[in-house]
Length: 142
Image (tube, rainbow, N blue to C red):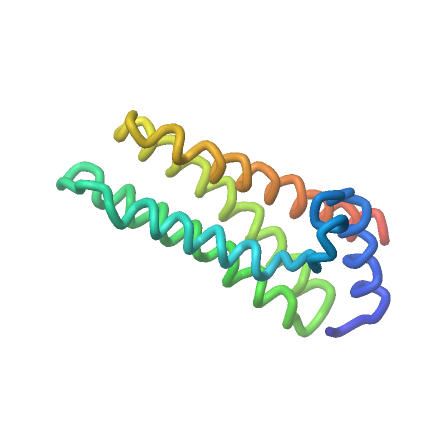
């Protein structure tokens, strides 16, 4: 990590989100693992859908955006500077918002799968809040 101060701020962010369930079960909060798992869950859900010429490109976009969240967060954790870190986190937030868009389209195309998309949509919303909090904290730091 490029700065112990920034690392400390991120740890404090984890506490400020008040993840009581994770704390009470003694599980370490790991956003890298969580974003990776999100991408995996999207792939598993989409793998079984019957695809046609209309929805295939949309599904491909969803897979790309959903899996890039974790990839960009991993890159952020290995950033060479605070500016680089902030940029990667901003990209993570943009990818989550794009993912939410594609999920809405795909779940609308497959109405019988809407309930299976709900927990993923909730997780995506939480990611937006987390990434926005990180961005806001970094802005307020200066």
